[in-house]
Length: 172
Image 1 (spheres, rainbow, N blue to C red):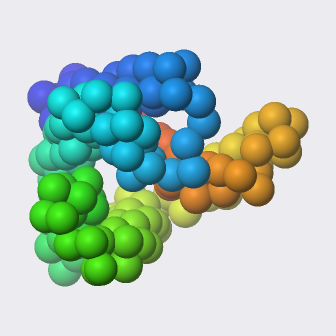
Image 2: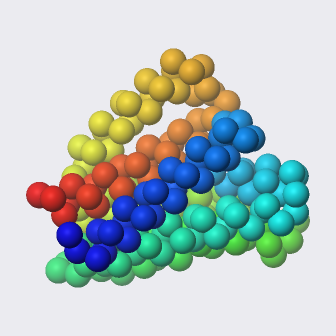
């Protein structure tokens, strides 16, 4: 097993642990970035957990994304995706009261779209997105949370698709 795949598995473990802890403690969020505000409402210092965890996840997955894309012209795509994800989770610290939500929403969309491009163009495992979309949609409908946590479910679909496509790419 390559060291970059081990980093991806560590990133996935951090993602799973973060979600299990936050959902178990604070309930199902509207989005992943909303967990920052929920944690901050509990205790100011807890808000640091969100950007640290999400940034670490993105940075740990980056070497594998780069190695997957090194043979084509899209090698810059994983780097831009990682920067947008880190930007998304650190923007609340800049106290841009008027612009914060707008910038955060824009970075969320950019991060999700770039991750989808990485899955489709770099790993070429586009069908993984469809499988996860079906499974997550089923979970959201069964739990009756598809309206209240739609963004969270979309983020989860894309993140799980990214992890799955990275792992499958290595195994295939």
